[in-house]
Image 1 (cartoon, rainbow, N blue to C red):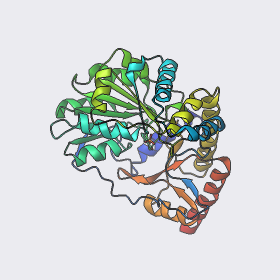
Image 2 (cartoon, helix red, strand yellow):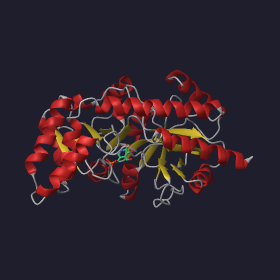
Image 3 (cartoon, helix red, strand yellow):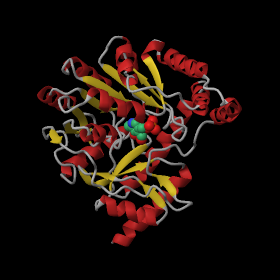
Image 4 (cartoon, rainbow, N blue to C red):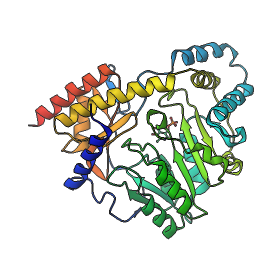
Length: 379
Ligand code: PLP
């Protein structure tokens, strides 16, 4: 089992090699006129029976109680069931200690991310993001003419909040995006750094903190701060730990004025199956702790196996991690898929480092076998 400390050290060693980790934590923010990735995506329609470790989905699906709730509600789905949405919103707000008028439900967190790009970025209001990070917001912002400043992660995998604030000041950014834990690295940005960022960013620059993977980590949420601030938006999703990616449910928490801005692009009632499963998930005692422990155990065992063979991994607290495969990441991903294990891709900044989602014990055993085969075939 690798400890967080040893993982962190490995990450620093990796950065020290100057491998593909160009300028990590040192380079000034760069601007990217078009943020579309040039890297070939792994197949979306893998052959039946493939092990899918490519989209950071849950191999376990919704909890049994959530599945039962979704099944049971189908007979009533001739109605919009607006009251059910209210019950879910109120339950979430109560559990997180925020007012219910600061919570809005969406079909996944992709929806508020897209809306954020439209509402808070423009050709005159740029976006600041980390590199690498989850790209859907920056892709849409760039496509709509916003300048996107990409700031390399620090050597410890955290967001370089100082460089991000500088970039925001320089460009008069409308929005700053911080994913914690970050996708694709799974690395975390400590609460103190986020506090520093909030205290020093330009007033007009909103901060969007994407907590899609927070439940897998030991990190505190910043969600309570939406009670005091009108420039912070926090996103959560039921797609990851709750295993509901295909059901579509997400949450935005923010000052009511910010939620109204997100809602200004129109409303759309949510699928009642997602509402019922979401509510059942929130009410399932021990679910988060059990799935977090399971994910951590399997991720740490896989990382330890890779590092014992000389393949360094970045420190992760999410249901994915990145491994330096010491060769072209796209070719490696393709070779893995040919052996029935579909892993994630590399990001342009680190072409030899690929993302792997954490699956079940059996899936990670298949991953190890395929990994060994690909490496052996390359010798
Ligand atoms: N945010 C991050 C960081 C993600 O990794 C993803 C999906 O992979 C999303 C948001 C969007 O997820 P969803 O729309 O399923 O909630």
